[in-house]
Image (cartoon, rainbow, N blue to C red):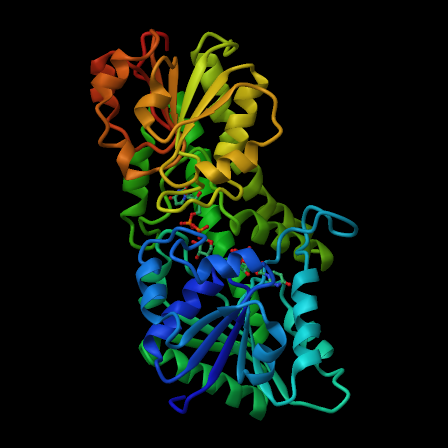
Length: 459
Ligand code: UDX
Ligand code: UDX
């Protein structure tokens, strides 16, 4: 697709903006517009301080913004002029009515479909970027078919597999790009246009095409598989703590089998992020809808183990610290759901902080990027919470440190200095297994890691 096109993305979020920025960089012939109903967010994308931190994004946005990448809140003209519209609005878990707590809340998505219908005067390709329940494209088509004067809309599914913190790398060098279409002449022609867009930088053999339902379902299943690996290793970590086996050694031994693979086998305090829980709930809901209760229970087990793992982490802290945390000071190292992002959606740190406050502990939170979000997440909670930019300040006077995000910076701290400034006995609970546990123990810390025997005078 090398003739100049007008491309629109609705939703300037964690997914929409990086994706459009990378398309803009590789396709100078096309004009890319990103609209968002949130005027503040749009203004931030147009400013020097972008609304979310993502390594490498700042440079790309600043290089292409105003050339072939534009941010606006003015939806109608943007829809009117577009040839291709990516829909990347959020699809959170529904909080009300039928399917509450499980199904996807499609109200933003449907509103967007109606907006497209209202303002379109010419044929368009509509691309689902948002993660949606399988068969949602059908609903989109039905809404768009309701046009008074018939306009041709072709709906494609093109789920995004980027992970936060590595979004730019993932977009630049994707394992695969998946494009699902209707298997009609028009559907296949629309698909070819999207294939041609990606071919501007993605090798053709990495662009997979499929029917539209396979594409929608594959996104849910891909996330469910990744999360399933983490829950599997986390379930084993509990057993390691009881048996003297070491989870890192087990993960290495298992993961070096090329049929298993070594990725996503890091035991942790639990997975977080906006996608895993939401998408698995969605998968479970769809299975139940079709009466596939055994399949639903299987996937629900992935979520149960994740909750169990975070809860277990807190109970281990409580047990190690003589069954009372009241008035003890705990420094939380990291609040983001993973390293290299300020995003805290579904972060296990939220649950850990709440549970520690329930136990009447004092909590000092430090994180290089996520303190603003942490303040919002914990707003209104009663209890003693401090927010510290500096990890040394967070740990000063503390009884324990709990590592909740795998930020590199926590590996390189001067733990002798930290130990000297802490209350004794001093504890470290490494919820990401990133620290040198034996070195910490030699300094005098009582060390508790995930899936490993404690190095502690109290164990
Ligand atoms: C995306 C996908 O859309 C979601 O389905 C997937 O599972 C995860 O990634 P994300 O980009 O993380 O979501 O969401 P968010 O950062 O909340 O961005 C969505 C944006 O859409 C927000 O900026 C919101 O203001 C905007 N929006 C929402 C609209 O512009 N119009 C609407 O009607 C609703
Ligand atoms: C995920 C998918 O990886 C991505 O393909 C999809 O598009 C969106 O959802 P994301 O949630 O951004 O991406 O991050 P990811 O790297 O998958 O991590 C998710 C959570 O799992 C984080 O809390 C992370 O810390 C945790 N994790 C990851 C582990 O606990 N152990 C691991 O081995 C890997």
